[in-house]
Length: 55
Image (cartoon, rainbow, N blue to C red; front, side, top):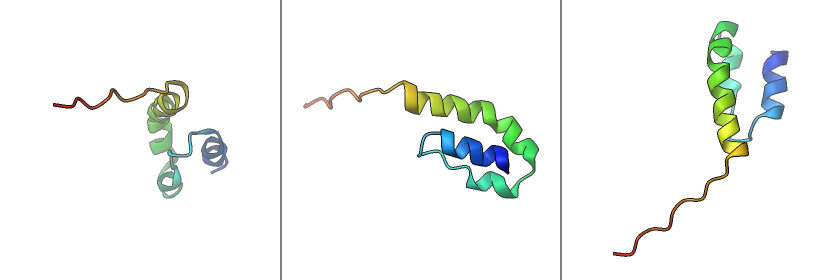
């Protein structure tokens, strides 16, 4: 649980790790690389949406 708390404090606020607390640690270990990629996308790659076409 300490590892989850550490990551929760570090990751983007939109990423919630609460569901992992009741699961086997292997679930978090399997998902962690993908969660980190999502965090990287949310924090390091700000993208603006293209304007809606008027037509």
